[in-house]
Length: 295
Image (cartoon, rainbow, N blue to C red; front, side, top):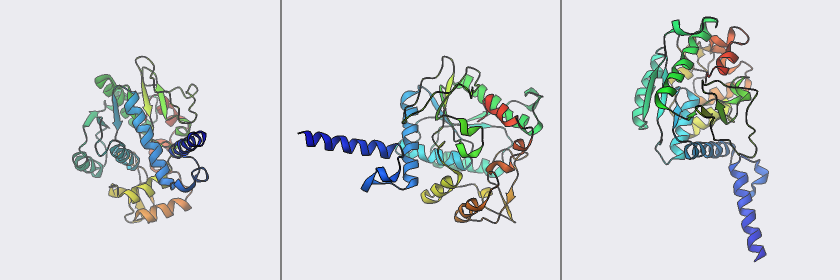
């Protein structure tokens, strides 16, 4: 009898370790490769968010990270995203991005919400020009939250993307005004998340926070996830990060395939967001945006 109980406990321990993304050595014969571990943890986070929050939306920026996130949500819920997918639209994206949205919102059967952003004249004049332009998205997001009453927003940010984002939690509480208090965040040990938003506020949920840029591309290749052509090199340049067309610029590159992108990332020291104009303005501009609710 005792042997049967011990065997069952061992099986359960192995399952828990695998789901938490434990090192391969703990998983024995049931070990998963790295992409499987990442996928399992992200699926777990997405299901937690959907089960524990009342009204959730997935934020879709149309870029490589949020496209992976949509793909993971479709896997987590057996082929269909069970909540609205919201694009907070500045009206200044690349034409290729709008074409992508139109096509895949239909093909993936998404419940798409497109929410506008207020004009630049209404935005904080003390911000540098590119950061001020980007802040329209934060203002648009606040308006969308007030309109729809979401208590959870699922966003596709990663810790390795930018230093301020490295401080994020998977389930990140936001104040009533959408503000982020970087100094007051809940602990997250052993995949235990605080999924109770403050009264009148909401949670940002980050299911791919633990991924890297290279892993996003490796998973995109493995799964055959569609991408926007701007990510592939043309005439010696490509985009590593996509935002508004007037404040986003390409980097020098000859990587015309996903394999070549992955190889390039292994050798480069250039930051992923080097083509984002606001990242080159005042030292605290991006941190000010993040504290105010920027994604």
